[in-house]
Length: 142
Length: 142
DNA sequence: GGTTGAACCTCTAGTAGCTGCAGGGTGTAG
DNA sequence: CTACACCCTGCAGCTACTAGAGGTTCAACC
Image 1 (spheres, rainbow over the protein chains, first blue to last red):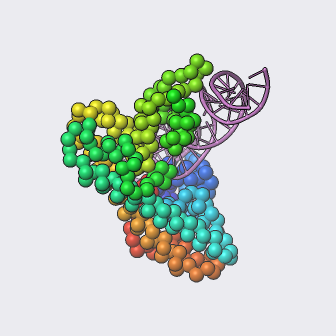
Image 2: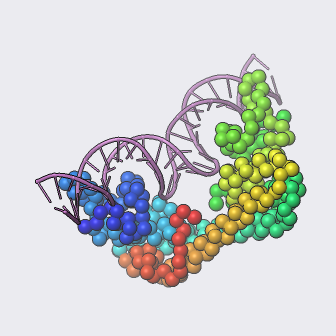
């Protein structure tokens, strides 16, 4: 039987985060000691590992909820799990593309700045005038 | 004189977002009509354009606050503006690197899934067992 | 058996950067 | 002078946690 702290250590999760997952129904309510402290078993360890791993891969908590649900039903088709992963991959592609456009623009800004006064700083100048940008970029909400 | 709505249209900003920027002190309190509606001039249009452009390049509102401050003092050295931009660029590099690791792992997951039952779905299997991952990935908090 | 101290408990509020809604007032074109 | 699009304030909600206050429990050591 694991305390919440040792479960956290094993999975690289903060104690508060585990309680948060329980609160939003991602983790089940575990058994308690007489004094009211949470105690976890293997099943919970597996579930939390799954969640954390999926988070590391960038899945949203909602996507993880679906994946866990699928994982709990071994007889269902895995098309849905596949679709969720593909969706996630697509998002990653998009985010990389956006960030690469940003990188280009920021590099240009930084390389052109020769370190004088702010009055003729390229960094500030570029920010002032969007027309100076060569690439499309659109990071907001990415 | 611009209404808040037309200022929003010119800069691609929602009305609520402009009011939010005012609330947190990023935009100044504008003049008002007798009836209490906000009216903006050129200076505010420039300032909001600057803010939005910097946001598109991924700068945080705090960084933007600093950049605006520097922009308001043309006689200062632009080292600071340069440093902020370099910091931002570094973050972009890191985020790209992380996302590329994710991409690799997600591609592997998706390509190996041959579409049977969830019981032997590669997607779910990989999520269950971190040891199957070939690359380091650590997206959480990115 | 008693004491200590780390780890646990609940509850609330805060983070970034907006977004949306309710319920009401204003400005302007026809 | 009347529509009606637009504006106002204030507050709740979003994601995914994180931090802190103030109090309780567990386990080890003597």
